[in-house]
Length: 201
Length: 201
Image 1 (cartoon, rainbow over the protein chains, first blue to last red):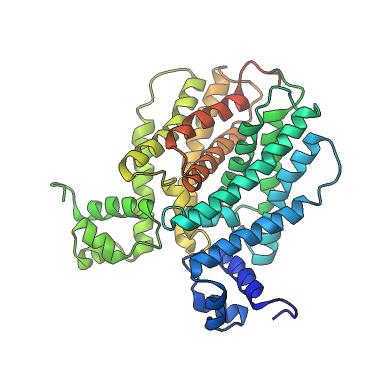
Image 2 (cartoon, one colour):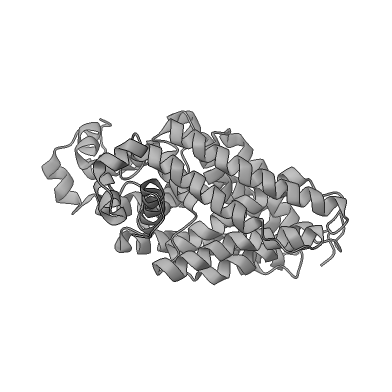
């Protein structure tokens, strides 16, 4: 138990970690409560259900990504875009160090498990992906505007491609048990191919 | 009950459909047996567990993809590669027509749900992905050899990228509830950017 952390936050952090380590369905409310050292009454004071906790875990991970992306070093548009994309992969390296293996994207995992099974949670995750994609599209737009990528790039298309490529690379690393530190270089190689300023349009 | 179909095959087809419609964890052996119209004793005659059925479902889907890819029209390497990539997306359109929504990739779904929870199943799915990627890499190699894509393409890299992009696009379509017929064009646009023969190397 970490001093100064509310029981709600302990539950969210514990849920985030347990869902990542195995899966949403494999973890019960009892296990979350035991691991977070809170009573079940406290859980249901804060959350109406495990699905409700899943939404809070999504928000927790969006906030973590926001804090991470807020530390971007000042640079041209392409460098910032590359840095942001690479940070998605750095998260996987950090999870691997903490949890012993590539565990997958916290958004992608819940998306695949719950999109067909829980409509309110699906909408919540879709909204989180919408926000993340919006941030990537904005970064591509900025790179187009400052001339650090090709002028004919469609920012909406490339933002979606980067998010999709990250999701796919991470899914394959998770199932094939390949090291997390391969994700970043593969993602950047892909991005450079798509936006390389020196290529013929 | 379809005449002439063995109880084992009915179980596999039913498992394949039910796992896709919701998720592996959301479907129990009882539901599979009820829907396939087989007794539980018959299930456990053919499969030692639901995990064992998951492996058979993976094999069933690999065989279906193999049959599909075997119908490729004769064409140059790039056209064949584009056709094979597009067929991955056509599968999603067909699932959407049958099941009412984008349900995700049968391999990707099981990969995300089970990779961290069931090591034998993880290895089985990794092997299926290895085979699919091998087929894509072979198609890229053929396209490089017949000169229909840039000569400096790394077939291993592009094969992996295409599989990852398909997985990511499908995951995002599933969670964002966007139409399946958007996946193919997005995948081909991505592929054309990566291998376009007319661009500067």
